[in-house]
Length: 105
Image (cartoon, rainbow, N blue to C red; front, side, top):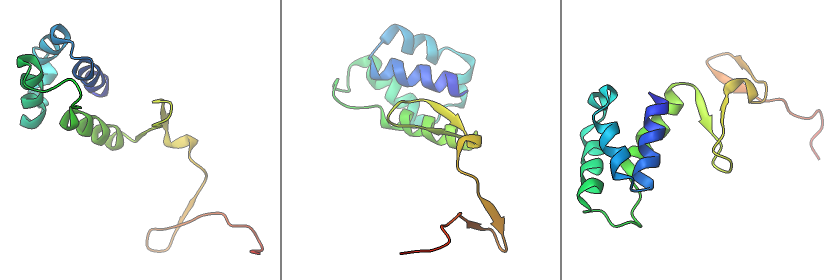
């Protein structure tokens, strides 16, 4: 699903009407919320100016990436797993303890 949403966001950002039409006919399109479908239809009809970003589609992509346990590096657009995050320990009632230096100046 994430690859599909990525392709859809790229097509919407690039205003690629042929790709948007093909992606809307894809079986995964039935899982898209109405706000994303409305954006797709608006781009296809030319109702959205070129400088307006498809915020609903981008938000859905972002939420889906987080639900799948991925994080997006905004600077490089690279996807990384949580294994690349700094180590942490969980103790007590779900508090996260971060490693701190022995002395604080």
